[in-house]
Amino acid sequence: MEITASVKLTSDGKVTIKSGVGIGKVTKPGLQVPVGEGAINPVPRSMITEAVKEVLPAGKGVEVTICAPEGANIAKKTMNAKLGIQGGVSILGTTGVVKPLSLEACRRSLVPQIDVALARGYKRIFFVPGNIGERIAKQQFGAPEDAIVQTGDFVGYMLDKAVEKGVKEIIVLGHSGKLVKVAARIFNTHHKVGDARNEVVASYAGASGANQKIINELLEANTTDEATEILRQVNLIEPTYNLIAERVHKQVSDRVENKITVSVVIVAMDGKVLGMDQNAWSNKPWQNLT
Image 1 (cartoon, helix red, strand yellow):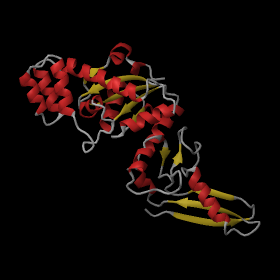
Image 2 (cartoon, helix red, strand yellow; image 1 turned 45 degrees about the vertical axis):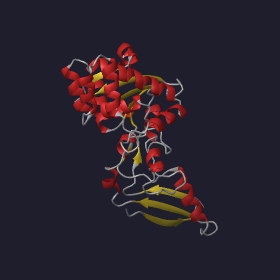
Image 3 (cartoon, one colour; image 1 turned 180 degrees about the vertical axis):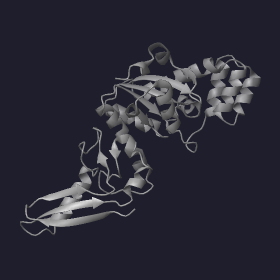
């Protein structure tokens, strides 16, 4: 992506950094840049300032305008709109240096969602694996966009960050294909890291009364959706997934050292609830998200 800097000398002795075409504007609190300003983070601003001062004539100031001509289009592929950055890309980086394809950079890019939710005053936050969970949280549970945090595959990392930032209550909501892994203490849910979906569903179905034939069918299922259909035929969807939800509750609560109140909702692709833990059944925390 092309990024340009236009520099104009001034006589006020100051270094002023402005955002131009393709640089987004901050519209929501909770980010490192105040609302109304261009989305150029403090560390890159500091690095630009120091670099300019090295060659700035005595008594002179400078106005630097950063532009990204294709920024508005590229921003559509990012999470900027959800975070409240409108109209372009962000100039990011805690050091001003981004490592392409870095796993750590990918994980860190998810964390500002928590900051935005807290800044908007939400005491209960939805943690969802991705777009499916977000869609269901909005459509089925009426969750405001800013109260939803996508964890990606990094469930454990995001839970750790939630504790670090003082989150008090989380509603863990997602498709069975992701959440059943957490029941097995798999906190990175990418299939290459760990995958015990069939084993989890089969074991909890057995604990709910499934016979050996059903358990074997569950172990051979291609997807959790297929497993759910097998459970439907023997009226074991709710008992099985309620038990799994309780186990997810325990694993998540252990991970956050019981510093966060946890509710768990497991859903199908169409948003239908398959199972919930007791906290979700009893308190229905999504009814009061303020």
